[in-house]
Image 1 (spheres, one colour):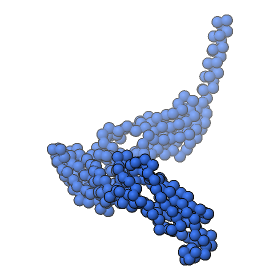
Image 2 (cartoon, helix red, strand yellow; image 1 turned 30 degrees about the vertical axis):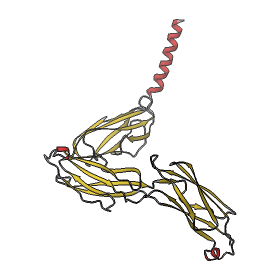
Image 3 (tube, rainbow, N blue to C red; image 1 turned 180 degrees about the horizontal axis):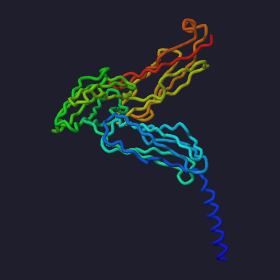
Image 4 (cartoon, rainbow, N blue to C red; image 1 turned 120 degrees about the vertical axis):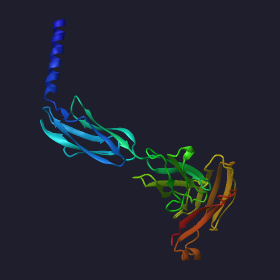
Length: 336
């Protein structure tokens, strides 16, 4: 019995070896590259030769990099036995600083190496470090009328003293100031960015150009974004009843912040055919506005003058100084 089992195992192993002996085999003439010292935003190219050293057809399903800084390009995705093709790799040091390692992954049908990696290394130098590295400063949603401040830090890596200058953003949407010798360190400066209380609601984008005394980094652009929102959130920003025989709509009102204290003191609409009322569901949290009514007839002078397109405004009055009135456009169509 033992002899039979050994024979079976030997036979199976033989079949496996026969099946893989003629299989496709991926081979790279280099498994890594070290670009050495690089400056920020510097680009380097490298070419890797990929060869199929097996007996089957090598099929490459995907070539990807773990970072947008690295772009691998492969023009041929199938290789016959013994055939070779180059993989062109472009690496950009972007805003990196210090030792960097990036990876290119090659997915293939090589049964022994379904995923092959190529390593990229570099040591990136910059005379000026910026935090955040993206050179973008974004502010999350905040109630309109709220002032918020953040800082962008600049650090000189070689120069004994750093000085930055900036007076205003390009559109003037943000308040800008600078602090040199930040926290007593002459190599560190701060760009102070403030969202003013009167910044309009909605997504706001701007940028600021910072002047420095660092050679090669004389000017740095910082992208700015903020999103002031109304102190109260409304379930609808407009109402359109179109061709309706009657009107019925509920508007829900909530505070943007749970700590906000407010009350709705009244509601009105400049369309007399629409009746509006309100009720406080939960104090300082939820208020409900009810809209009901009937459309005017097609022979009404207002309908004739407006060619059947009736438009008006619902006004919601509150106790908030920053938002005394909420206006919601309302419209409907009359069949003429």
